[in-house]
Image (cartoon, rainbow, N blue to C red; front, side, top):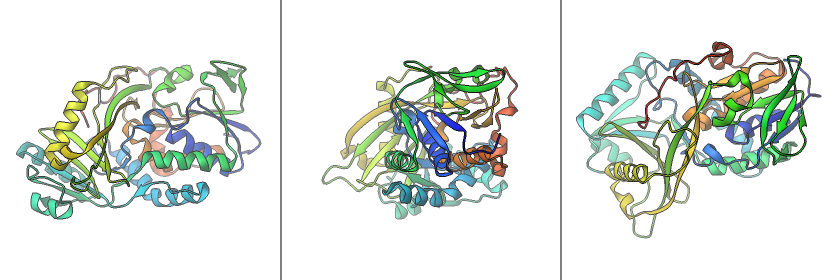
Length: 391
C-alpha cells in the first residue's frame, strides 16, 4: 500500500469498525469519505457492548483470543482518545465481568473453560455461588458457582457510536448518506464506488467495513462473510426494583449462554440469541421468551424491570470466526469486516491495523492472523460455527 495522505479513502459502512477506522485515518491527515445512509445503526446499535476476550474464549480460537486480549489492552487509551476528540464520553465501563453457572453441567463447562484458559496462561478466579453474590447481590440462589474476570470490560455501545461520529466529524470525515452498491475497479486497481443512487464516488483506496453486507461489495469477498442473527433486550429498572449489577454478568443456564451488561441509567442489555437465518431481522417470540427466562434464573430481580426494547442485528460472521483485516482483491482495496460478535471489542486494534496498512507499516502482531490472504480467491468452506445456539 502506498504511503501518501493525498489519496482519497472511501470507507463503506458506518458501524463501530467503519467509524473507528475513518476517524483514525482522518486524524492521520487523510481525505476520508464514509458512505452509509444511517451511520451507527445495524449490529453496532443493538450490540451488548462486552469487551470480553477471556470469557468469549473458545477452544480452537486461540488466534481470536490473542487478538481480543491485545485489543482490550488498547481500550482505555482508545476510549480516552475518542472522548477527548469528541468532547463527550465514549462509554467505557471498567468494573469487570463475572461468569455464573446454575446446574452441575454448567459448572463443569465453566471448569473446562477455566482449565483451557489456564493452559494458555490466562488464569481466572473460581468463585462459589456465595462469593459471587457477595460481589453482585443481584445474582440469585440458582447460581452455584462461577468465575471472576476483572479484565473483561464493557462499553455503552450507543454512547460510543455517538462519540465516534462526533470525533470523526471533527477530524474532517465527510459523511455521504448514499449506499454503496459495488467497488469500482479498472485494470486491477480500485477507482471508486458505484452507489445505489446518484453518481459514483471516486476513490484511490476503498475500505470495506459493511459488516454482514460486505460480501456483496466485491467479488473477492463473496462467500467469506455471512449474516448471523442475534436478538437482544434492553431492560430498565423501575422504582422499587433491585439495583442492576455493576459488572457484566455472563451465565450458563442449562447449557444456554446469556449475558446482562449494565448501562449507566441502571438498565441492562440482555442477549443474545444466535441463528443462521440469512438477512432476517425480525424479533421472535421464542427469542424474547428464552432470554427473559434465562436472565431471570440468574438475576431474579429483573422480573420487576421494564422491557424497553427488543431488537435484532446481523453480526458479520467469517469462515473461521476471525475477522478479515487487510488487503483483498485489486490494488487499493482494504477490508475490515467479519468481526462476528466481537466488533466492539476489536475496534481499537482493527483501527490501528488499518492505519498501519495505510501508512505502509506492519500491522500489530496479533492482527496478522486476520489477514484475508489466509483464504483462497474463491474459498467456499463451511463456516467454523453454524450453530443456532447462543454463544
